[in-house]
Amino acid sequence: MAVVSFNKKTFEKEIGRLNEEMQHKIAMFGTPLESVTDKEVQIEIFPNRPDLLSYQGFKRGFLAFLGKKTGLKICKIHKPEKDYLVIIDKSVERIRPYTACAIIKGLTFNNEKIKEIIDMQEKLHATVGRKRKKAAIGVYPLEKIKLPITYKALEPDKIKFIPLESEKEMSGLEILQKHPAGRNYADLLAGKEKFPIFIDANSNILSMPPIINSQLTGKITEQTKDVFIECSGFDFEILKKCLNIIATNLADMGGQIYQMELRYKYKEITPDLKPEKMKLNINNANKLLGLKLKEQQVRIFLEKMGYNYTKSTAIIPAWRTDILHEVDLIEDIAIAYGYDKLIPEVPNISAIGQQNQRESMKNKVAGILTGLNLIEISNYHLTTKQDQFTKMGLNEKQGGIIEVEESKTNYNILRQNLTHYGLKILSENIDVEYPQRIFEIGKIFEDKNEKITEQENLCITLAPGNFTELKQILEYLGKMLETEIKLGEPEQEYPSHFIEGRVAEVFINNKPAGFLGEIHPKIMKNWKLKLPVVLLEIRLDEVLGKDWF
Image 1 (cartoon, one colour):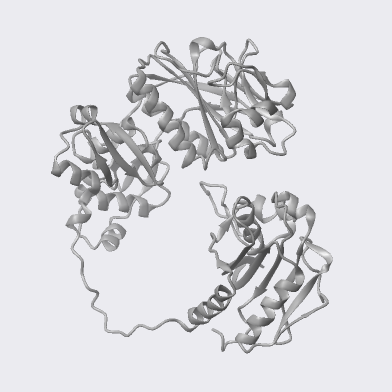
Image 2 (cartoon, rainbow, N blue to C red):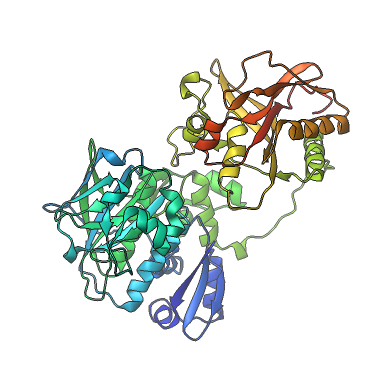
């Protein structure tokens, strides 16, 4: 959740007086009011609405909600002019492979608008960009740049420019070591032999993403009229959405949007503000909300949330990153209808509830491990091929993969094990106090002969840890559950992420159930882990018998 600040005087002039009724409407819009002072309004924006992270974006959405400017706003967009080109060199393929770019002309800046742009950048970096890991944004004064622009990677010692808010020229490595932004985000380029840069036709470096812009070509001022915008990262779809948010916000400031040609191995044109379309079943909406809405009412409510609606189809703005499913549209209908108008009803059901036996046993296992000072974690059922295979030293061609069709994120396959998530959690918490002792009970999935199977697994991960320590935990777990758990020489091929000679097969009631072992150094390196890690993953379904579940 992010808190954004707006100028109160501007808010009341362009949106409406901040009386009690207006404050209630702000809350009903799904953006709780944090505070109001004589000069400032602070509003909480939830992570699913990054398009509201600036005043312009909030004003556009909220005015529609108030019924003042309803329906889909159409932004005029101009085709690329001469040299409106970004050449993406193949050297960035394994470093930071994608970028989405635009040019905005005819802007009039003052200190307040510059601050708004900077705040919007940082809020998008922290939310959509995952602290610049997935997306980093650069805004540059076009008058200081000669087009076309090249996006490529160079060795750190060949990168030399004056970083933003500095006076001294630095190399790429010096920026990571000495500049405040470089130190904050150095981990994003750690281990890379080359660093990415944007460079113009005069060989002037614009920036070294995702770290810092150049002081010469990367700082906008009150004299700036036209800007070049780039978003760089690993997911082209996310970058395009991010660019759409920024471009439309600057258009709302009075700018004109110009597309740019991106020259990869193929040609792309960004930004693309063409609205998306999604079917909406009114019966589903009424069933979920407990209402009896007619099609005309649905159209009015969707228009209050910034959509167009015709023939059971919602026309979705290009800057809405959160609309992934019909249920997201239904949520917006509920917001427009008014959560305060929904009447709670007690279900007409005569039944006595009790906890599922399966869940009771899972809770018992979790309680035992928590009593041993382990922390329970819970991860997505979806994962990425990079985490599931590449970082684990596995070949994705081994089969059994269940892939999500038309996934809008890089989490596009169902997980086949819990092991990689245990290591992922450790890698994302390398700065947290050790020891780190975690466990997860969850489902894994596999495609066997075109039939999807799922089973319940337990994964325990210790860092630092050793074979003997985890063996003692497993034996104690078996004792408390009155279940025979033994270790033995692997009877089948064990996973390659374990160290040879430091791995054992786990047998439960004399049936093979999984493996326990110490993680191989090459896998540790892939996850950037420096302390020894020991891990086990065992099956709970079937192996433990029906009495468990």
